[in-house]
Length: 285
Image 1: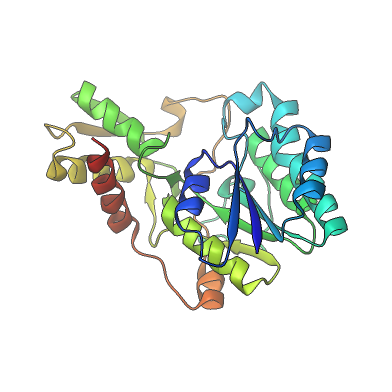
Image 2 (image 1 turned 90 degrees about the vertical axis):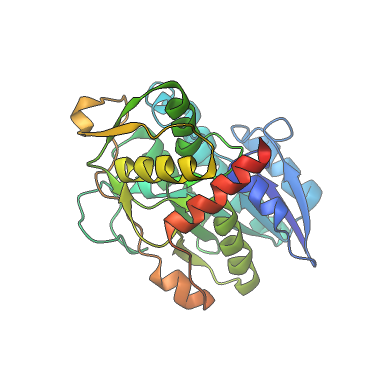
């Protein structure tokens, strides 16, 4: 089975390539090899490679910058999945499209089910919702949230850097979600492809927290592992005290119970996965 993996240099892309099942030929595609903003290039590549699956892990992920680059964000996140879907319908392949919790507005107080109404607050979220629609009825759509991995560009590694530089950090405490460790996302993706059933699925680490709670856990675990020399003070602040160009959902926890029932598995608690990631980070030096 041949599987094209876009975004191969990203956190999820790298995790996917590290966990490729034995019977699968994975073809990694970085931005340099495939510009997701170019529909013609997507069509040509699919017809040339004729993959059984495309895992579209590539994306425009600069949430705030998307507010000033809506056309580019839409081309990459919104239009590319439709180009993949159209080409794959002609070659006989399938698409697994990765999406986000940002398709929701955060007005809920309980986890969002896969069929919950979408109402994106940002250009980024709207572009990803458009991508979901363009992926088509034969696709697998996997939404996930707060992605992090050792060696990547993410909240955890940003916090580690700031904790080495500062005695006090101010972190938003009124946005609640669930971290998702990239190796676990990859495990879920390969399992969904093995099952092959189209539909919308959710993935996250078990539990939920705020960005402030996540930062406090990072500090505690990092200190214990020797990644930082002192425990910084992590002060909670409101979203209004840290204005950003893009609005974020106040509550974006994804209900992954249907995914776990479908696959007959479970995810580990987010703090347990955080520690595993930090152990890897320490090994990287």
